[in-house]
Amino acid sequence: MLKPKAPVCFLLLSVLLSQICVAQTKKKVASQSDLPRFTYPMTMPASELLQADKATFNAFADKVRTDLDSILRDYEISDKATLRELLGIKADLQQLSGDYEGSLKTVQELRAMQDKPAARLITRLRSESELQAALQATTSSGAEYEQAFAKSYEDAVNKLPWDVVQDWAKSAWAQSKTASRAGMIAIIKTELDPAVEKSKALNNDQAWELVDIRTYIQFGLPEKQAVAQILGDYVKAHNVMKPDIWEAREVTLTPADKLTPVLVGIWDSGVDVSIFDGKVFDDPHPTKSGNHGWAFDDKGYPTTDWLYPLTAAQQQEYPIFRGELKGRIDLENGVDSAEAEALQKRMSTLTPEQAHERAELHKVLGFYMHGTHVAGIAARGNPAIRLVVARFDDQLPDLPFQPTPEWAHRMADAFMKMSDYFRTRNVRVVNMSWGDDPREIEQWLAKTGGPTDPAEGKKRADEIYDIWHDAIENAIKGAPNTLFVCAAGNSDSDASFLRDVPAGLRLPNLIAVGAVNQAGDETSFTSYGPTVAVDADGYEVESYIPGGTRVKLSGTSMASPNVANLAAKLFALDPSLTPAQAIDLIRRGATTSEDGRRHLIDEKKSAELLREGKAQAAVAH
Image (cartoon, rainbow, N blue to C red):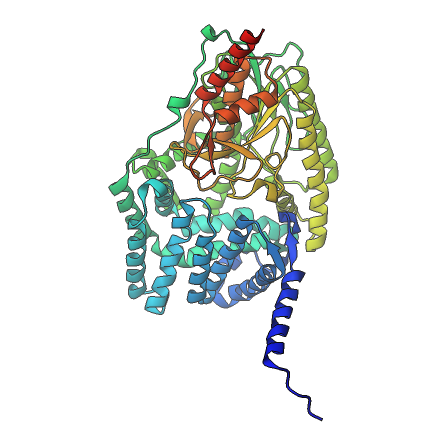
């Protein structure tokens, strides 16, 4: 017997109810740790797969895309930064597979999700032109494609408002002049090949990085000369810098201000104490490290080296590295210097193996000079400052040994020694220009032969990370009279969602700092979130590096010590301040941008508020 057909309205209701049920079954993602993990067995080094034929790479990419689609389908993700990351990989995979129309739609969706003004204009701008050219020419190579790309990209770039995108334009121009196939391969050799060698697999984060680099090699590199020409013309035609707002806000103290010496800890990679004459704390009761604070090696044991030790080969490379830093800045600003010319020449002649060796070396050298650069920013304009060194190695995924709970507990003990030191010596400010999240432990495990099973890898990483997280939190809590100032992070993400420490913590004696440029505009890299209270200059900030040379560096690592600098000046003017009172002065002195996203510190305003408060208290008594 035939069943009667269901009414159309009943069918529509059934479809609607099924869609509601699907939506209700989506797993909610409260933090990055709630996302699923995947692994991909590898039979060749990642750098070989990067260069493999289309059939071989597409077989790998198809697996990655299936897993990516499952995340987007099965998980309810409210964090925009995570969605942007996922959509970026989706767009890459679509472009690699030849789905140019689908990729173009994803790029447009991705751009619509941006919050920062510049990002809403320039996200995937080059990719968009590549896709439009491929659709117009019905191919992704050849003269017709190249002409279509150049016209599309030039039109898009020339429409951009210079005052909004100038930092991106200069940086992208410099990158286009130094990018090379060897350099791209070197990234994979440096970051992913060790994981494959040890673990015989890649996790999903690593797989996504591989897809991203493959996309750039296939589509971005062939057009780099056109990109360099177009961006160069644009920069040269508009290269008027926005005025620097920070000099007018700066406070420079003198002995006439009746200052009290203030101890400021630089919890970082180490400090070249020899270049801060008269501004380094000389402890009459030395630790096992010496009379300037505490220093611990990679495994958490005390050391007497205030700076991260370099090998002879690394010391020999250091002057070259300094020149390349200047060359990069000169390239961004269109300065035809000897350093800029040398950098371009070197990058164009390196083999993949040479570029890999350079990348490994420069990671060490960048870390080596980091703490000194931070210390110089924190000490600026304050004769009362006395620097305290708290040295350790935060380059977790690059450490050569496998992380264990025993190692984490040893580091927790080291951190508590630092905390006790801050408390017993009355260190008033500590700068922390670093941060860690659970994914870093997972990457570290992958690169050192950890579990290939995703669930087991995450479980082991979580165990180690929980120890690490609590160690940092307890160290801050253990010195309640010390104000800890930390960097928000450079991943353009919500520090709280990432579970980043220390930036994601909520403690009464901790303040997290985002980065803006010389004009107070949000940088492309700065992270954010409910725990990020204020913003400071973090773009091309000049300071010392080991040996005494001054260079410009960018990052929230540079923004954080600008706030530590302000806090140290407040404590030097009034040592009775509590951390909470100092935070209040910093926040009340800051100016909020029209869009409410930025809270720019103002040293003069905060110092004025302090003086007004002291005057009112004097009258009251």
